[in-house]
Image (cartoon, rainbow, N blue to C red):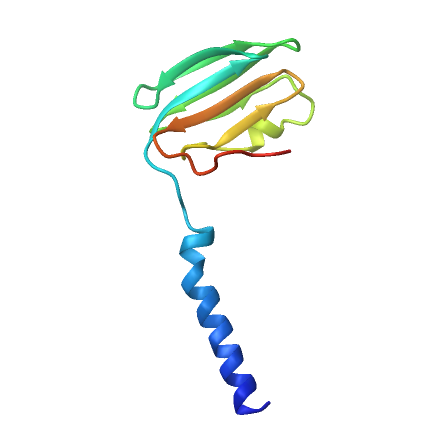
Amino acid sequence: MTWTDRLLLITAVAGVAALYPWLWGERGGEAEAVRIWAGEEEYARYPLDQPRRVEVPGPLGTTVVEIAEGGARVIADPGPRQICVRAGRLDTPGDQALCLPNRVTVEIIGADPRYDSIHY
């Protein structure tokens, strides 16, 4: 390996390290509330500073959302794959859990969302 190769490698590693916080770092402002959709309509919107459990009706049954400690999570869903339950805690603006068979969506909203759009 020549000195030019080493210089190029060091420059590339330093460039990735310098850009890491900007490209992959935590972005998004303060989380303010959780918005819950049932089908195509907004079911409810709750502030994150008041702990509660919300039961959301859907075509397959009831999805249970827990709001606590500045975040929200789906703790029970009648869907067979439990993808929205496995999404875990949502606490950054733009975070979402989609319970697709039951048509329930849980989304964290705030002043500065991390993403402006997400495509599946």
